[in-house]
Amino acid sequence: MIPDYLAEALGEVAADTTGETAGYIPELATADPERLGAAFAMVDGEVYGAGDIDTAFTIQSISKPFVYALALSDRGFDQVLAKVGVEPSGEAFNEISLESGTGRPLNPMINAGAITTHSLAGPEGLQPTERVERITDGLSAFAGRRLKMDESVHASEMEHAHRNLAIAHMLGSHGVLTGDVQAVVDGYIRQCSLLVTARDLAIMAATLANRGVNPLSGERVVPEPVVRQVLSVMFSCGMYDAAGDWATQVGIPAKSGVAGGLIGALPGQIGIATFSPRLDSHGNSVRGVSLFERFSSDMGLHVM
Ligand code: DON
Image (cartoon, protein in one colour):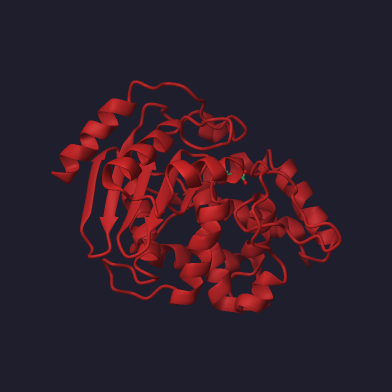
């Protein structure tokens, strides 16, 4: 039943070939634009899917809410909130978007905030490689399997990382980042280069929907208050300058990535993931957005 429903929904959006693969990371521009998949992971551990749900792609910005969760768990709310706010920026994901005066990034879903939360994962004093290890372990626990990194996507993005380096230096000038800011950007881009499938992403989203416990492995990955904070910020900031449209039309906490992944998490119910690499002008998957609009209306998922 559910796989048939998913296959039919994929068939409907497949005709839409609008949008472009992410051009600013050369390795992503070469992705097969026709790939298309959708997966549902229920909080009782059932997983359903159709299409390309076992094709690996890089997680990109979908790592941001999960690393925010790890930072909150590892350092506590006060330390993280002192450095990263929770207000929507209404701007593109790669805008500088720092609070005037303090230099605090507006939220952890834009690059400025995500580079900062990357630096806050794990206990204080970790070496950059140890921090990447902490993040790989943490995201693997959300997925319920060991995730690997795509070294060529990492190398490709590093060659064109001027904007993220500029953001990191701005953060350094405000004292929001300390130490070797270039190593933080390298680690953040490694975090974005972790390989996942739509199935993995649905399970990761279901771990949020299940209030921090992976519904397949049974492992508690992060505490419940952390999940509430993360889902709230995903709701208001997860879709960048399209967050208001998303909140009204789809109405569930969500996060997109420039490799074409998109997740949504509905507390107590379901984690949803879609994969289709062509992006709209906000950097969100075109077919992914259509699929979520359909899922939300067919299944009454809008939280309002
Ligand atoms: O920092 C970047 O530009 C990328 N590694 C991630 C951006 C991203 O996925 C934005 N989301 N749609």
